[in-house]
Amino acid sequence: MKRILFLLTALLCLFAVSGNAQNVKEINLWPYGAPNKNGDPRDSAKVWVYIPDRKVATGRAIVICPGGGYDHLALDKEGKEWGKFFQNIGICAVVLKYRMPHGHYEVPIVDAEEAIRLVRRNAASWHVDVKNVGIMGSSAGGHLASVVANTAEKNAKPDFQILFYPVITMMNGFTHQGSHDNFLGKGNQKRLEKRFSSDQLVTRNTPRAWIALSDDDQGVPPANGVNYYTELYRHDVPASLHVYPDGGHGWGSSIGFKYHIEMIMELKAWLNSF
Image (cartoon, rainbow, N blue to C red):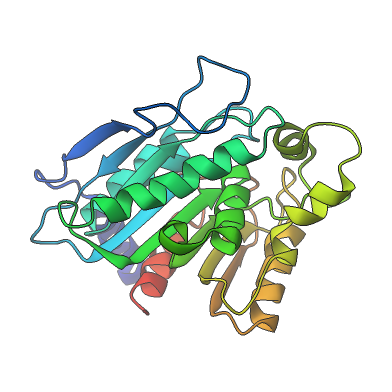
């Protein structure tokens, strides 16, 4: 009984929305025109910025990349709901609507990198420490986040990464084929497959990571996240891997996920560890 009461109290505390947690800005990421094109003139990149109250701001910020197989975006459960959560615990959350690649792989990458730069340019007014800006992604958004974590430079490089059931590899047999085809294009892409397989990009300079996935994920093979963790460990990069017994794919911020409370508490504990 005590455990049930504790968990219920924890849940209420974690998702209580304070009256001040309503400061959200919608910003066009490329007001003067994007540097790369994806063939769809109607597609544009923008962000929703969830700014915490100064009194509770931790100085930390997270750019959030929702998933959707590089075909669409799960903006609510893998984006905006997380934005509210982080805002309420004092973290500035920037939910990114990145453009779909349509085979032009550089398009979502430049969007994600610019979102990180945007945070650092606005660090003072958004109550952010420029050395405490991370990136987070789910599924295909996890692939985008991990690629940026390993390849971005200077002001676009994140300081930490959070990945939910991520697509990591582009190699046949373990990749998510839809994400692969939408990101790289169909056909023989051997050179690009290796170039954008994040487990093969890890170095000692890769930022620390928190990874969560389900053992029974039928959408993205769990080996993606596990192999990425193994490479992080092999390169002495601090990392935390959480494999839940079941839950499938795409649970996002849903409290319907059986291990939701445990997952939230583990994530918060990791964020408080550095």
